[in-house]
Length: 432
Ligand SMILES: Nc1ncnc2c1ncn2[C@@H]1O[C@H](COP(=O)(O)OP(=O)(O)OP(=O)(O)O)[C@@H](O)[C@H]1O
Ligand SMILES: [Mg+2]
Image (cartoon, rainbow, N blue to C red; front, side, top):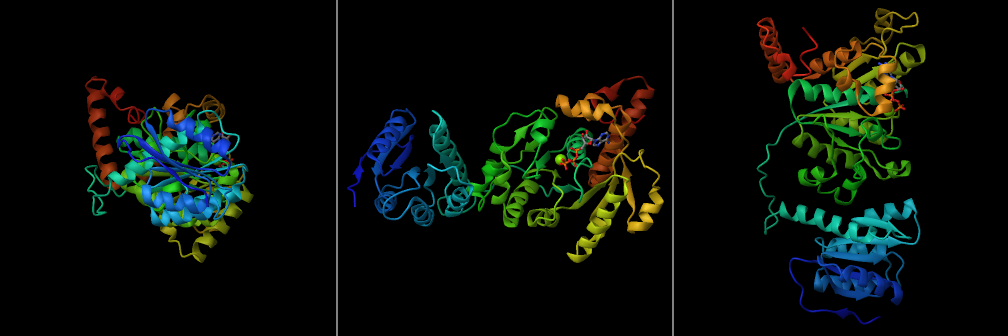
């Protein structure tokens, strides 16, 4: 077993780091890179997994930077032991392989981040700072005895609206994005938009958001997600809606389990009044978990036979999983292009009422997607925008709907008196 090299004094304000790597050259270069930074302090190095665990138990560094491939117990097993024995120490694993299976095992072992070589010049430093920051935030929520500190933030019980359709391409992303903004505009409430199209989410593009954090960044601390951590991964859209983006690569979707979804949404609904969720066309277990955590499903369809057939099948699935059908709000998209099908016939066929319809927005919708500016913002007076506002009004909590209606009456009266106050409330001025 290699002899550990330990330094004794550790300045408190710095991030204390243990570097574990089997090759002396890369151990030395990693140590040098981190130790020369003013906010970091190297407290030890080790060349094998057993020494790393012994050393980390004794020194309790803030972060262990560890190669997966080690003599003795490997990096995965060492991470597992550290997660159990020194839970406040965050592990960053490094591997020569960019292998999603390995990534998954690393995360399951409790690693807070996983980097694959070759590393970019700042990758390691950024990762160490990020995991340290997340761990500090987690710790700050706990008192010395492990009690959860009472947050001064208000705790809400937000409404979760899951925009789903069993068929692809019917307008889920278009609808969820514009709906979230419409709710925000009508109510001024805290609204989150979550891209749970885990394999192929594109809300980042549709909203022209360049944030680098995604829902995957919640996985390392998934057992204890906090509103503070959530704040660090939500992207802020200019409309005031906070956005949780989808993973950057399709294979990362595989890392999510139903329990993760439950944990993430438990925090989301405490932090936001409304959570609008985009999904993908599947009955994957993650989607079923989303149904469970949703207050209601906004079920989207177009008026063509294949789409209607899939809706009927979906309603059968609802029966099968005992999902109450009164929590399914059926919405027709592009309802003006019926292709000969009548709404009443459809309702009889599927035994479910159509709650709302959105008209076809033609090139306005396509242009808004390509420009990254939702049509509800660029053209709030367009018929399709009015339809989205009407749907938003329909899904509001009763107390919010009442407040919106009172505000609308006030504005109508003010307009009569030529006060022009409607400009102050963009979502309301469209309905005179
Ligand atoms: N009401 C509408 N009027 C005009 N075009 C629309 C309307 N709704 C959706 N579209 C168009 O239909 C296409 C598919 O929409 P969108 O991407 O929102 O669907 P989706 O269900 O999210 O698809 P995917 O299965 O790829 O996730 C887009 O090009 C969009 O511009
Ligand atoms: Mg989509």
